[in-house]
Amino acid sequence: MFKNQAHYAIVRLDGAVMYDSICAGLMKTGITQSPIVHFKVRAGVQYHPVWAIDELAVEIFSYCQAAKASNVGPTHLQVSIVATPVSGETYSNLVATNIEWHIASQQLREQALRVYSEAIQHKKKYPSDWPAESMSIPVVNGG
Image (tube, rainbow, N blue to C red; front, side):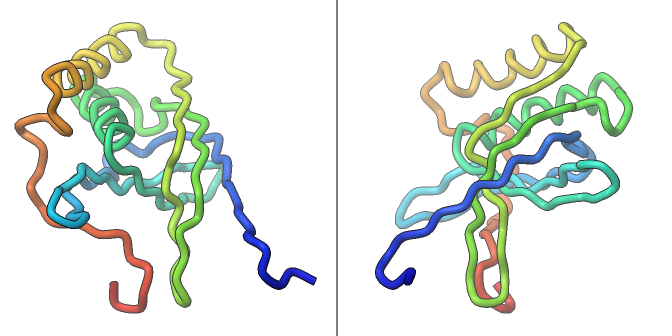
């Protein structure tokens, strides 16, 4: 019945980015390196690990840095995230494709957007102080 058909899935998470959980680094794709982040989203009582790459990674990292600097509560970064599962035989990872921020604090939003804009405005892929740790999305056992 499903032979030779492509199947796609999306996941939507409504919850809070746990900004203390974020890890940032660089993912090598061919000869270039792309910014990548891994973080947790709390939706209800569950914590969901999520990945983001490229500009979305920089945006999420900027909001997390602003939240840390503002010393807000751990569930302050309320979001709606759309993600696509990237799976191997033993792993399934959520890779964010879109994020909508539900933040009342105008100061925090402006601070995050300032960090993000500076990186993007200067035609860089990521800020100069971006962590250089090599990271990759695990899709195979031991990955």
